[in-house]
Length: 261
Image (cartoon, rainbow, N blue to C red; front, side):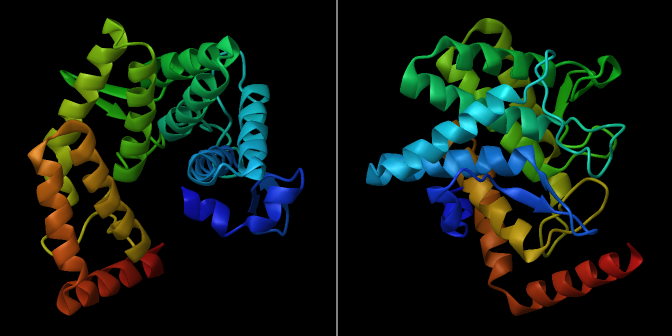
């Protein structure tokens, strides 16, 4: 997340927040970008104690609070899919930001907003929420109209993880955390294709950026959970990343998919 900040240093000394550049030349606020930027500012503030990082972190937090609707949601994809603009990743990353704001400031409003965010995230798709329930499995859906996206599932899970830590493992949310982790471990083999990682269960291969992100996420998940499978996948995908043949195959596959799109 800190890279999000260091790549846009000009935002630190003014009131602007990250915006998404649309194809028609217009710009719009993209909630996930703001959440990630705020998280990066918080990390940099903890490392450096520089006030400009604190100021921008709190600005992102206030934007997050102001733009949450009465159901606990953020309209994340209105520019892309206005009929289904909500997703678990936005809910989870906003929660991670709000929980940190609560820990830092002690303001209860932030924790109340985090609870609303998680409660909406865990609602079934059929009720307008962002979690897909199938038998004993629980899938945190970055996009409610697509198949599972791995990085989005994990970012969503981290938000739930942060909320569980902050609420001292309240049983309802701890159970949801355990169920979603079990589901992620179960489906993880579907995200490997023999020479690279898959972006989603739609059959899309990961770009080099997302492959690198998957490795980092596997390493973090291993540290958080102790589940050996995450360390195994981090090792596997790092080895494939360094293999010219694997990189070449992934490039060709991704190029073909891009052409078809």
